[in-house]
Amino acid sequence: MTSRPETSEYGSVDPAPPSDIEQLSQLRTILLDENEKMFQRMRSVFKLRNIRSPESCLVLCEGFASSSALLRHELAYVLGQMQMDEALPTLTRILSNHEEHVMVRHEAAEALGAIGNPDAIEVLETYLNDEHVEVSESCEVALDLLNWVSNSTIA
Ligand SMILES: [Fe+2]
Image (cartoon, rainbow, N blue to C red; front, side):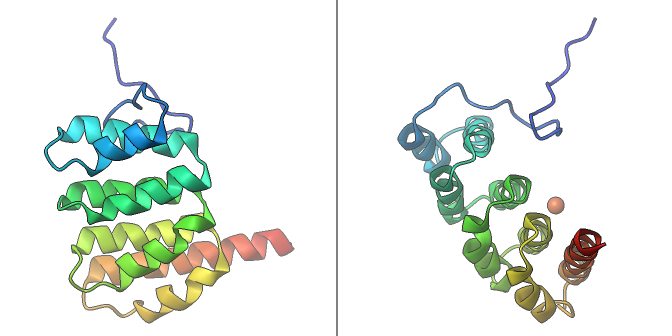
């Protein structure tokens, strides 16, 4: 039988398996090391996601200092999976930054919907008519998701 990558505890098949390292400081060092291989940096990302503490969430937020748009896109994706309010200020900043890569802004918008906190509505409405259709459509989907979630809780 062929071996395939494992499914994570979030139900996703991730581009890299979680690191075996447990210490936040070590995971942070690898994540922020621009000379480290992308595979190892992503292994840190998925480990920090799986730890899912306010501290590990904030280490992931620090990762947006990376020069790799691919890594920043991945960070936004996992912050959506984690659904922690600690990530809201960073994701808001990323979505609002017009210098940021459009696919990173798109993923930040979707993450703001996935977290499920209505505090994200204001920034999502601000970029609902963004010049980049990837961003505007993501804001629309995120707002519909937040709306759908709040309606299904009431019903
Ligand atoms: Fe994406």
